[in-house]
Image (cartoon, rainbow, N blue to C red; front, top):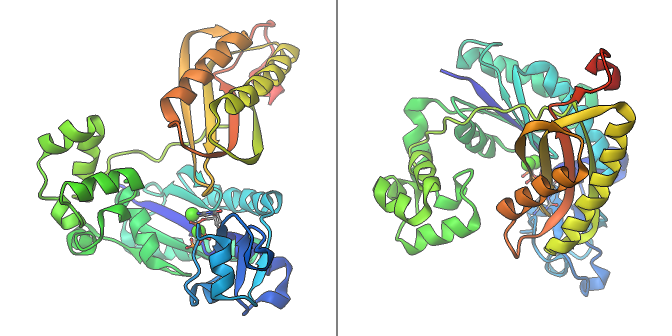
Length: 356
Ligand code: DCP
Ligand code: CA
Ligand code: CA
């Protein structure tokens, strides 16, 4: 059996703000768009737990948050600052993990099967992780522990804030069955809506659905949903192996669903990457795009060529295909990245490590 942990920072952006402005601690703190005296547009990115007592939530219109608590501390989003803290957190976590997979600016999976051999030891280990993050950054996090990613994520939700929760196989059913289907990690809003229309409101109800029914409705993804409803998730913790690669990332001025804008950003980055690999005398085999959504979740998708290439046109062709396959027409994107890996030098004997 595997032992998987999901570490997620508590009220991350707002906690980062409290860190550098200790005087706002204890007050309701809301990070997001400018409320402009109640007329502001845009949404709440997040808020601390004090603000949550007033019903304020991530994604809520900022004008509504203002109505709920006018004298809260409203602060703008400072990506750069949170990113710096995030990098430090991820660096600390990597040291504890066997396999490591960052899934958001404030969240990562760790496969610790090689580090601990049972759940009791995993809890001690999780305590160490929490202490190390506190010591390194001054921030609190929550940790879910279970046998797979799906259950670790759901355990973490239940551990919040500042907690550790273990979800053992024998407790899975009674834990997940009462939950609404949209609480299943990996089931998005659209899928949840369709499931509800099919008459499945809770995970328990969903677990009664036939495999064929789900597959005929959702294709191969139907099999995953079928498994999720049983707490089954075989997916591995996958290293976002960014070390031996060359890439660029850019944040859009405003979140965009304009594919042409995304393509032109990719083109700019492809030109820069082309220049860098030429200077270093490198060729690539794999092209990866990284997408950050407005809610700061991220994913990466890759395609590999059958040969080594140094062509920016090939790089871009692959990137466009990845974009078309993974971004829906109305889907908003905050940040986009392009990266090439599987690198090889075409200039004689120099070691790859020299270029990194
Ligand atoms: N975020 C955002 N808009 C959203 C959701 C999240 O801008 N709709 C940003 C702000 C959050 C960060 O991403 O601080 C991490 O998101 P989480 O969903 O992990 O939420 P928090 O860390 O803020 O709170 P929690 O303690 O519930 O994890
Ligand atoms: Ca969080
Ligand atoms: Ca998160």
